[in-house]
Length: 107
Image (cartoon, rainbow, N blue to C red):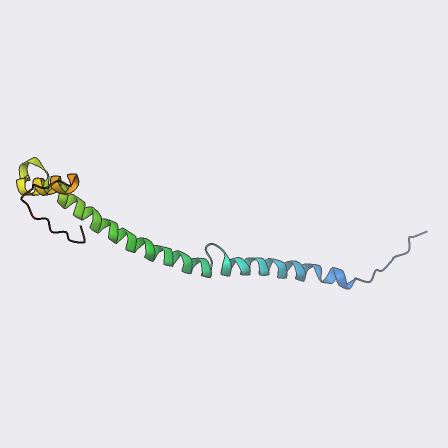
């Protein structure tokens, strides 16, 4: 005796599994495309950091150039006795008794 065929009615829940999974994947990737580390918001943050680092780099380059200029003045072949005396007095905070000291800001 042949087995009777059973026809099942497809449930509505089974019909929604694939679209729900696709929607979940689309939502996941869409969220990270906007808010992820390399997304649109993250890109703006990275560009802001790049601008800040470029400003700091320019400041450090100027500071380095000033230090190189000071070191060049202290080399033996270009040693200026007045410059050496000025640096020593400033660093040691020493003056002669008959000298007049004028304090300025910026140094």
